[in-house]
Image (cartoon, rainbow, N blue to C red):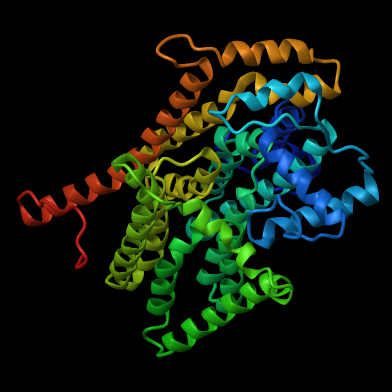
Length: 459
């Protein structure tokens, strides 16, 4: 399929082009999954946010929105389009039959069931973002290699990734927008459009916090790119000015309304750190804080290493360190929607530098998809409530069976959930170990003896 890719010069050549086929297949998968399966807990929040916006209370006037404004603005735009073209009267209901869901305290479940049309509308936005991300991956690979075949494979590794379309079309989380912004930022950094790169970096971080850990690596790249012409300080200032503008563009309405603290609360909520009592409480409470603080040191170390690279190595090292940083970020057992940001960097590294990492891609993708689908019958509630395709009574019976202990207090839901999480984690860990082992072997060959630390700050 990827051999001898011909240029597009006619409608026939377009239809036969691998990119066209990949897009059609990827869209078809998403359009089949989108109406059938939905994680109702998250979709209920999106409906609540739109309801609050339509009532004139803004994003933070009423309870229900726990992120910075970026996703809220996107939902507002989606709501505007819905009002113009679709006119969805009912976004969700609380059927009496679903009330038992809220007795399963081990999971985030809600008795509110959003409509199939509402779910589908939100997921179309994810599909568009996924397409744009795929195009940027294609562009970056082609720009790096000049190889259309590799660029096409990179696009496929993103757009046909089971984890990606599971999160977009089933889980319904918006991490794909953060991925879009940070990839655009990388493009602008490499093309020396630093003010715009700063704006996009701010957008990425204010959508989901994880891209913040790329800041030192990206700054190191900018500094090294301008070290010889003496404009490194100006380049950093330009980037910072763009980031500040991006921050104020997003946050100014909240600042003017006195809602700044509410709009940045998401970061502290994700890190945790509530009061602790027992040793277990201390580990679970302060563990995230310690880990995410450690990530700052990792990012600084990688940035320092980038400054030691020769000019010819800097661009390659940028992608390598962004991938490694992303994998290390998720050693703290993440839900699958967070891991979406790993896939673009992994896909590009596979097609440009290291095919062996395709196994890591496969493990992460399958594990993440199993993780998303672990709810099983719960994902069918919208179809059971608003269509005749499935019986709501049968779905609730299936949920009850799936939440019944089979041995040692373990339910089928928990077993599938844990299995998917474990497989995904193995895939992430394999990426980190790949780079550590590779560096260890290189240093062992260089020094002729065993080197205890695979990474040093000097080379």
